[in-house]
Image 1 (tube, rainbow, N blue to C red):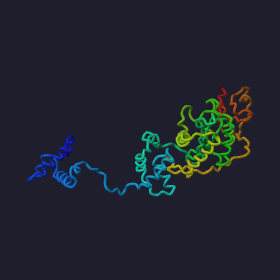
Image 2 (image 1 turned 90 degrees about the vertical axis):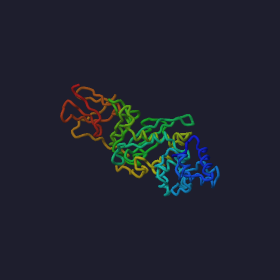
Image 3 (image 1 turned 180 degrees about the vertical axis):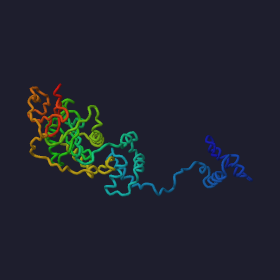
Image 4 (image 1 turned 45 degrees about the horizontal axis):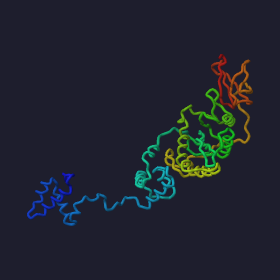
Length: 376
């Protein structure tokens, strides 16, 4: 049994005093003090070598730690964390290994090093717990686009960051510092992306301006232009931002790693920092959802080139062609039908349903955009 906690030193001193008496029986003393003979001999030996100081508790830390991380490696990890304060242990380990540091310890050890240096926030780490998300099978199957919430610059004006993200690879196709959130601004930026990366098979956006309308008339001028290019548009469910989970999660990363750490003076200064960070994000930053590869390792441009001149509109065979008049209506069977103001001055194709002649479908460039019940 151990010494009594309340009188630890006094018990040891009393034991030593009796053990040093002439004719002392050490075995009997150990039974009296309820300790083992091994413990008794240990304290007697320490007292003879060190005096009363030998009766104090000693550190259990080993004299040698052959597996302890070398100080220079710890310093490399600390500097990496200070350079990228929002990155966790797994990202830091992979990033350092990719840069030629081959002796980086396991992520758990990296976390211990960060904690030891006061660089690990347990509450913040919990927020970054990875979870499984659905993703498209190939690059360019789906691009997600949205505006990150605008923020003030030091010149008193505001920056509206426009982000475009590839669903499969998480590759950041575009990060643009914009003055506003107008159709013209977004369209100009998309033209540059389409010229550089080709056309996606589909795009996903929320229901806000400039790409979303009402549930009854969801198309805007921007989305009609995308349909002209053969790019169908999907909108997230209203009040469900998780539909665009990857872009929403990316916005949090952008905020933590760049926006929170900087104060920009002008839009040009914003764009300069955006370009530098976008390069880091795509080329170097390990991504949890990509087995710690950077997004560029999983992305390639689309095989569909951007047409500098829009091709003629296409319609299903047998379509009844009508021109959309102001304010977004067509005339059919002596009645006016509201298609949507975004299609004003364009032509649309009308096709009867294969199974119900009272149902009429409206097509724009081979995409169904509306249906009418002729009996209503």
